[in-house]
Length: 396
Ligand code: PLP
Ligand code: TYF
Image 1 (tube, rainbow, N blue to C red):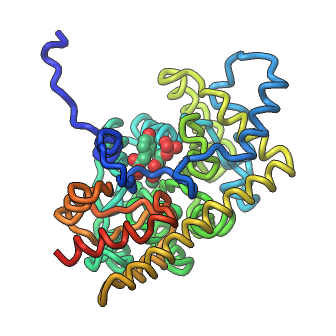
Image 2: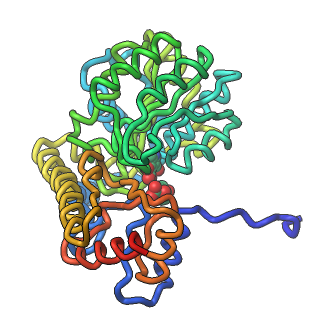
Image 3: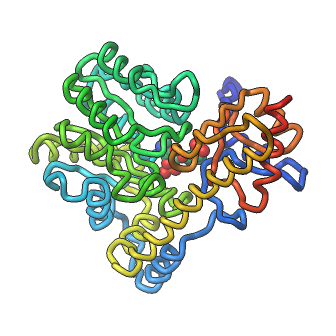
């Protein structure tokens, strides 16, 4: 039986971690996988998380199962983080999921089971797992234009043209709420209004991937896409991840929120979501969601979280600035100023695959083959080294 199993290809991004771990060069630098690293190169546990975990350990009375749709106070906090009070709670079904990946998969499963013949439109480029997730639920996908040919700016005209001219009413459109992975290129508030108008007019179903809330311009500021879309579309799906903004990567904390036109529809949708969870993993893991709920239930811990999130966001912006300034000192024409307009952990550097290979082979600097750099993996003290290497591969 198993002898017939063929080997699956490795994950293109996580595979780089393995290569990095095996690299003996003491000067190696990992700017590939999307995790935040502090100035000492660690991916820290947030102080608010440690404090919440202490309370949980002290107060825990049971390891009994959570409800199928997750911990109720956690779900309510997610709803308020994402929608504030802009939409009546009776129109939103929130289900706790294992990470943002679990949320996307649950959304795809709902489409597969309840929305026959639906197709999803995905940006070019996008996070590689998007295609795999929808393919796993047999949802056909197509691409809309997103990154302009200069690899630096947003092709708003191309995107609107594709959404207007190529989609069929009823199709779904996957959008990155902020901090687009892999490009860092986000629409402006005005452009979100234009996109939302097309979604509404063409009766498209928005699926909003919200993996970086708070990493762009702030927790509330980053809801600009959600606000623009939910103010003109009656239905939408939001897939939240708390891996990055709470640093809870391994605890697998996420949620899918389905907004419907009315309360009765929401009840039906919720029942279907629960039925899908039941046959998939039965009920979600508790710890990470309990940490998030403990923090958000407490004003002191919430303030601590806001502070720590702001620290991560402002440090990433400072690293962008330092990289751009340092690149300028390495030679005329090394203008990476476009990185300053981009948001979140990632940016497209514009380096081609040969240059990416050279960075890795000659300098043990790992970035993704597409040229994507994890800005959050840069380091203040080693910026000179990084920029000298980048300048060298550009000039070769
Ligand atoms: N969506 C995007 C765009 C991401 O970049 C990621 C993680 O890197 C996810 C979803 C999934 O997040 P999680 O690790 O919570 O599953
Ligand atoms: O760096 C990225 O874009 C992601 C990181 O379960 C990642 O691929 C790794 C593992 C995972 C989710 C996201």
